[in-house]
Length: 79
Image (tube, rainbow, N blue to C red; front, side):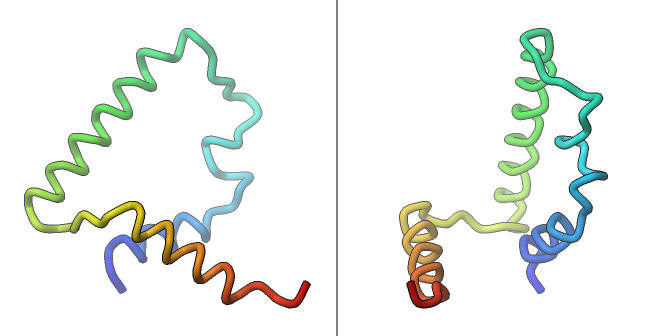
């Protein structure tokens, strides 16, 4: 299993109740903009570093979206 597939599997296994994004006690507001921006910047840096180390590969988004749409079309039941 690829690292990406493992991350997706792990994420899907999380209970929504335990996921930080769904905790009702945590509201995101304008005061969080700096923290959110810093978190996205750090994630971008991690992603770039992983790409440069060859741990991940880049893919064309249009090809990915087309492949996902095709899978959805093929998996859709009658109706």
